[in-house]
Length: 278
Image 1: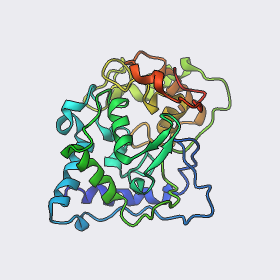
Image 2: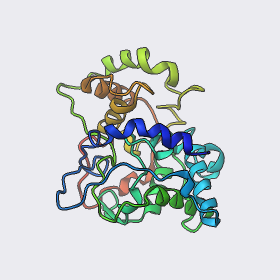
Image 3: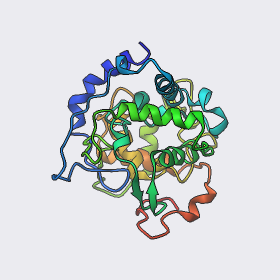
Image 4: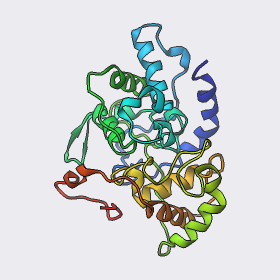
């Protein structure tokens, strides 16, 4: 029953999935490759988790994703959990879902100009979004997260087009207005994230020393805007205009947050996004 209610809840979102992933670059991946089969969003049932050591790994992986502060504590440097970005334990098709993700890797990524494994990508999140440190590749925690994502990807063939992958790209039709974003944040976001952005019992910090660092994907305004548009306020996604989502993202990402010393090694062969904050 540990995942059943979550999986059932996702059925209400499935109908949106095909429309909410028009993606570009590595955060925004699109269903534009017509030579590959397009698949449906269909997370596996919890009943398919084997009663074996692999099943134990899958369950532990879920716990690490949802309760990273407890189960991944030695490797986390802020107050975030993986599920703060990959909502609903990676099952939400509008929030960088893990469903099908294992079929994408290995994948060449321009940020480090090499072919990345799924474990490499997970560690990138730990080092940047969680402002922590990499998990040892052979550690039980890394193996558990990989097992969980691989289980969620069952039935998705290697190389298939995944319409819900990443986030839906949106565009602002005017210059960014962080002052407007500040007003919207006070009216719609502060209740959960705090008027100081440092988080509350209801929501994680979105800036300050305990939030994601400058090299996280969410530190890019276009990525944060896409996430905000489709998911925020929580339970009221799609209620902000594209322009307002960009303004809120611009305001949030203009606030102080941890640095990332390794950022000097990013995009060694070019391709840095225009909205990279460094």
